[in-house]
Image (cartoon, rainbow over all chains, first blue to last red; front, side, top):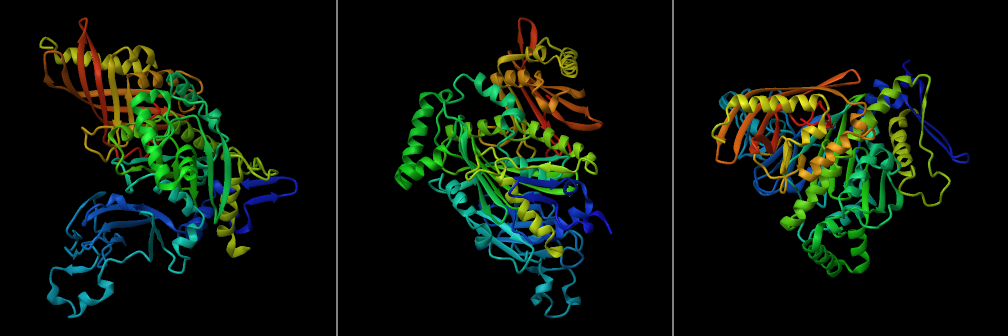
Length: 423
Length: 161
């Protein structure tokens, strides 16, 4: 019996005494990772991409999602398709480019040609096949079992019997609406993908992405920098709330002193910037009224969608997803999201803002990477130094953005999935 | 710029590499003009892309570059404290074009970074726009084009490439 089989929980919880601890075995044990693959990544809705990445018929991207190779394409009628990128004949990956535009997809191995919808169109030596061969569904590229979208966020699920995306997301939709409503037309992914990796367990990035507690220490140099950029900050205190959205999802919603290209002006943007920000804000008020406009414009949101999607609506909007490759290694992909109709000025400052803080060349993310890798190193002591403590704010009725409610929401749901069979 | 030879350019780039490897970053910053830019584009956009319209890894103007240097010299730049050891190798140096006041230079690079028993390799090409200032070469633009697929496995650009 391995260590995982002996466990029936990774948590030590005592609400009355405000104890919430997570076993460090959960970050290092290969059997845990196998269980996560089967019970989380094979069962939950996973982010595939954004509809704006495929503006025209024939546009496609190939992507690794939940350990699968997926071809995501816009078909001839303008519909979105998500299919397994494997030839029904002998299994080769059909599309080998990361992105592009195609009229059809051809497997180079034996030359089978598929339509944008994955249907077999022709294959060399057709006469040698049964007359109805092309009519058989098994001759086509296989669609993913479930593919659904919400406000252009496209998700797949490998469990045919899973609840609908709508039900799965639940209260998360309200936050995707707030982000989607920032555009008069629609939101779009900006060109350029940040692809990176961390020598750390994937759950560390889940925790870190919704951890308000580490900001001032881990990112001390970022705050130094903002203070140095004469006019980079406004006197808005960093404060707000954490919410458990159910199903393991969570959000932090808070005010912060940095500029938001949605509508929080900072002096370094000057008079031109002030006019632009005022115009954007008035647009929000006209469309949604004062109260909702304020919420959209002045509040930041770190939104976590179980198990591995983070949408940060902060000084820019980032979409980030990540997967375990080994207990101590993950790959990360991140994109910038922006209103399609945004002016050149706003787009430029949005991306400038993004790079200051976010991403593996920013003034903050490299320190997050370091922190997570140092945790993973610390877990070498997991046999003796066994527990992580995430009890901060347990006694409070309304936990703050820098408490740990959101991590407990993740871990409770994680535990339910991973140990369901033995519970 | 007509009298500047490839030897001059190579000496300049080798000296730049030495400053970076010795973590003499404030001196390194002095190689740049006051209106200089330092770019590391993401690897799925064309080489001449603009950071105003595309998501990059790094897109610094001179001010942000000086702040990057300030940051990297602090103990609180956790990603680089203690400093990693690096070796910047510069090769295949070519003068691509030459005007009266500015020249374009291409060079291949390999940079090794070692910390905590792990070595990362960054490789690609650097495109420079160089000018002269009181007879000294200075950098007006450094555009670092990574050949790797993103930053896998390097994970971050916490050093200057």
